[in-house]
Image 1: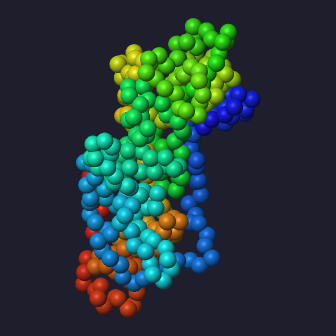
Image 2: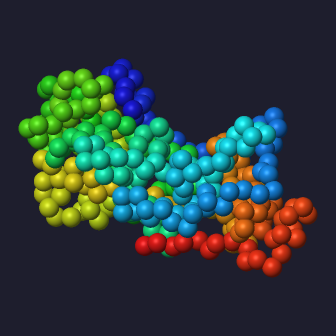
Image 3: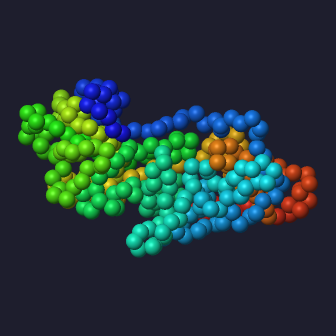
Length: 327
């Protein structure tokens, strides 16, 4: 998020707490209503599907990709309706792409149009560790150029995060004090984001300051660009990162990533599908389309409701693969 000085106070109003309350500067592009997008014609699935799209597990860069995640190129397009669907939740699409210059494949997920490297997926407690891809190209003191934003249909922040707020392109002049100088980034090779313009840069932790003084307010009036990102609390509070936070420690914190959780929807049939050991098929518009069951059969809303035309073929088989849990 960037802003011009005359608009900074209005911009910070959405981020800064009222005096004497805890600071919380984590920005979400939130959509809380779990309602599929409306379409003129409600799409549907054929009675059978290619079972290969529901692979138990695919390895990408040492990370096992399993349902409800899926690879971006493992989707099916229907001939009748011209839309594609996945064996997994729409927003949990993963790109397995080669990292430059090594060429080693890494799993990447897109949130709010920005790419994040997936460091770990914990299927047993539904958590995922992500790191902004930008922080791996800025040396020991990288610059972040955007907030973390995403649709909250499936993903949401965990309780294990903390916030770092960056202020770029700052010109404090006579307003600079020793107290504010303590928050200044002091890396010799640091480069602020291009959109920030010239000037000093600062980084402030959540609740780092005294509760009756907020350096964010002073910095907001004199800086061109403000970015708030979540980080792992335990990594941030490590003594080495605290001691050298403004001279490179924050870079290590950013590279260690932050945690998000995912949850399944309890509306529109998906939970019924999963309870019957099926896997939910979703369109790119987040529509629940049907239940992908064992043997390439499709049920709606679950694997107990197979179409009459294919019921005889389905009889006597186990319903579907169980979810592969990887730690």
